[in-house]
Amino acid sequence: MAISPAAPACVVLAHEDPVHVRRLVEALDPFPVFLHCDSRTPDDVHRAMTEGLPDRVRLLPRIRTGWARWENVEAEVAGYRAALAETDATHVAVLTGSDYPLASPAETTALLEAHRDRSFVFAHPLPHPEWGRDGGVGRIRYRHWAWRKHMLRLPVPRRAPRDVVLTGGSQLKVLARRHAAAVVDTVDRRPDLTHFWRRTWVADETFVLSVLGSPALVPGFADEHVPHSLWWIGWDGTAQKSPPWLTIEDAGRLLAGRTDTADALPQVFARKFSTDRSADLLDVVDGAFGLRPGTAAAVTS
Image 1: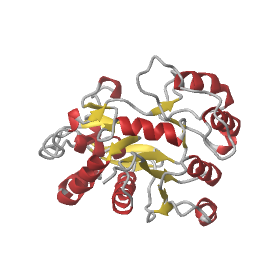
Image 2: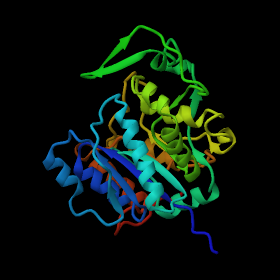
Image 3: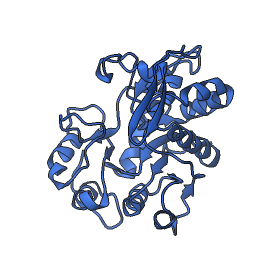
């Protein structure tokens, strides 16, 4: 039996800017997309985001997600579950509604084919020096609540669950099918983990990565992933909680970083884009990489 080419299913977690979300969906053609829209998003925005989408887009049940909330993980796992059940994708990519591809579908498929059974995850065991004074361990050791973009911490330490190696990194990742399945299986088998992580801080940067990074839960993952982020993010050296929005002024460094042959592996997605700030830059990206119908590739990598 012939083996189908490698290809991703894309889980997109969105809450605003329907024009950009629809542009993102179009740029991801022909890959299947599993779209989650925050249940707090106004009805008119939700309709503008979801009405008339192509058949390759499936809408996930809406959850009340938001800044630093555990429900972001629930939406991500729901995306894995649906992608595994409804497609034969070799990988599952997790994107936000402000992301955008920097590679044509053919290039993305070729990259995944060369790493057919491997995930792309850039993560680090905790404590990690770049995650503050305690290396990020406090995010998990103490109970937290998010309130109006503020962190509320109960200063009573607790013990981490058994068999878990605390690990942190970006929510944005591309998982091989078997690793996405391992995450779903762990969620189903270990309700103690989901109960514990519900009160951690920014759980979408630690839960899935801690599951994958724990040999007792996912044996062999250390040798089955590529420690490389597939996202170009426009950090500019200033201290800030979130990546800056990209504008046409970022075109030079974005394209230079994307086409730098010194890197063994490319970065095939980028963030953060919005319709108001980034329309001109998105036109440049489309023209450079031939991402949407009617565009022609002008840059090779």
